[in-house]
Image 1 (cartoon, rainbow, N blue to C red):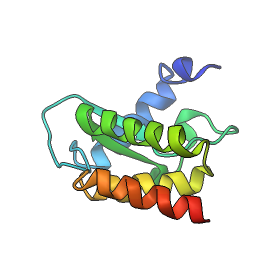
Image 2 (image 1 turned 90 degrees about the vertical axis):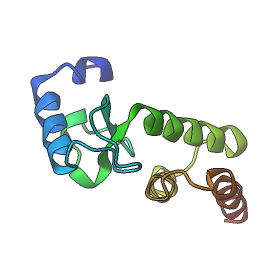
Image 3 (image 1 turned 45 degrees about the vertical axis):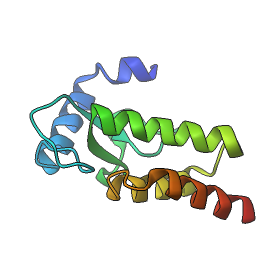
Image 4 (image 1 turned 120 degrees about the vertical axis):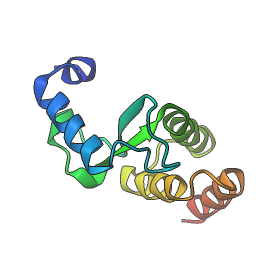
Amino acid sequence: MTYAEQLKDPRWREKRIEILRRDGFRCISCNISKVRLNVHHGIYFKDKMAWEYDGIYVHTLCDPCHERTHSFIDSIEKNIGKLNPILLWDIEFVLIAMNFDRSKEFLNLALEIIRES
């Protein structure tokens, strides 16, 4: 089953509502509501279907924060290459928690730390 097919599955729709409800139907980064919200997988596992993830790995983001998150990941992978998914998830989670404040500074620091490890 492709990822696009998984997102149409009733089990994903149920999981999506569960996460939206848990997050109060608000973006966990900027706290906005009453906009289009995405349930974002912070990490992907090859052996899991979209609805099989533990709640810690999925969270609610508005469209702008969702786009910034993907742009941030793309920037890191463009500069460094593919990263360990857990490390990338940790970096992404900090960025979201910071509401993308000082994201350029944070990106540079993250890249420096990754290059040294």
